[in-house]
Amino acid sequence: MLQLIYPLEKFIPHDCFKDVFSIDYNKLYENGKRIILMDIDNTLIPYDIALPTPEIRALLENIQKIGFRIILISNNCLARVRAFTEPLGLEFVEKAFKPFGRGYRRALKMASPHGTGEIVAVGDQLMTDVLGGNRFGIDVILVKPLKKRSEKWYTKFNRLNENHVLKRLKKKYPEVHEKIARVNDGT
Ligand SMILES: [Mg+2]
Image (tube, rainbow, N blue to C red; front, side):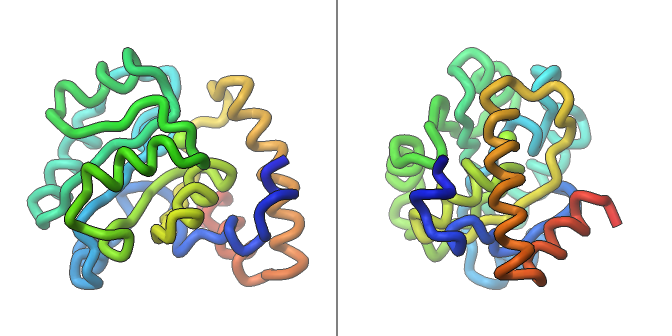
């Protein structure tokens, strides 16, 4: 129902890619970004996997080598988030309640003295990651969800609302809709 409260523009990602490996992190750094708020579930790993894969581990290490600080921000519980982040030694915010303020306020405090202009968020959901980032003036990169089948009921509910938003985007911002659709089709 969030799509009835917030203007459609708050659901528009800054950019979108088919996965986290396709993002040009060097370019983000050149553009002044220093902190990455990274979603976990269906962005880095599917819901039915607990630990970082070797590919994800290598990617996150490379991102850090560029000079980024990575803060993992997840709506999932402490046990799940800790199991994933501990082997990586990364900072995290669990039970973030994206798109609401709790997790973002914690993350922004951790990111300080870097402000919202130097932060970029990455996630797979319009209703949580994109809306949440936009509410705080953070650029958000949308990626295609890794595996929709294993999503929890509340994410499935979000997807229904997301489809509603996508229909409205198609009408009002056809170029945005096309870009998201192209990523989701994997073309
Ligand atoms: Mg997610």
